Amino acid sequence: MKKRWFLILAAIVSIGLGLALWSRSRSTQKTPRYREVTAELTTIRVTARATGTVQPENRLEIKPPIAGRMEKVLVQEGDSVRKSQVLAWMSSTERAAVLDAARAKGPEELAKWEDLYRPTPILSPLKATVIRRNVEPGQTFASSDAIIVLSNHLTVKAQVDETDLAQVQPGVKASIALDAYPQSQIDGRVSRIAFEAKAVNNVTMYEVDVMPETIPPFMRSGMTATIEFKVAEKNGILAISNDAIRSVDGKLYVSKKTEADPQEIEIKAGLSDGKVTEVLSGLSAGDIVLAPMLGDATTSTSTNPFMPSRPRRVSK
Image 1 (tube, rainbow, N blue to C red):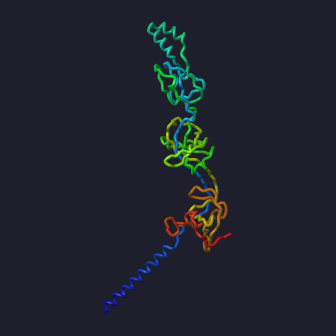
Image 2: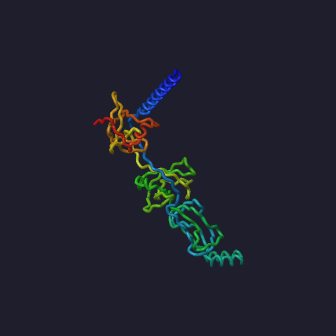
Image 3: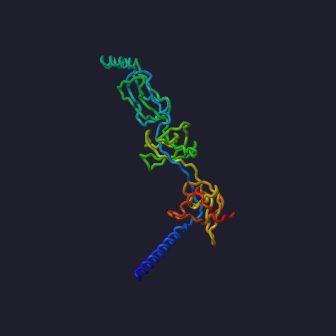
């Protein structure tokens, strides 16, 4: 009988301890934890990123007027040429045959026909840079062969996601980083946005031309680049961390720390970079607001301004 009562008593104690621990655990989980965030003056920069390829703005293939043989090539890849500059001298098929026959008769006969039958110059139609030299002296070619390729200006063709397109407008500043030279930042601007989209891996993309302000000597056609578009920037503005803001019925609130209980203050928000948000009204520099502690499951929904959270008290 005593053993029976002892077992019953032990069971009651165990149940009591379990209920106490469970109650304490629930009480701890329901108690939200917050950290203090100070509203302060700062700088907010909003950017959008994309990848792209360096390509000539205008790629011009120089083709000979007739088939023939190359006599002299006066330029190398990378050379800058002016409009109407002689790039090379060529002989037509007929002139090449005449010179070959004269050469067999001796240098005097060759000089005679070289003076009578002058070679044809190949001229540059614009100020540009030589990016390809496809022929060497002595080689023959057809009129359809591109013997020299020119580019008047290198540009970057960026592939921009349609979700970022509204932020990337002509004239927007950009920073270009070439994968081959990641430490060298090249300033540029958006010059053109394609009107037709392309599907890249089932994602709708638009081609955006970014014109570098200066072309560094190491920049080459075909290089891969990362482009950071400088969408917006504000200096010396009042801002707070995004996780301190809650959205209720389309309005934004923060919990402002006071000597008594925290007050729920409605604010007007401006520019945001995804981490901090500009406060247009409702707070002053130095005000302290409460933000949920990261990793606190009981307050995780409060960290998103677009997740509803009912305020306790609103100060007008």
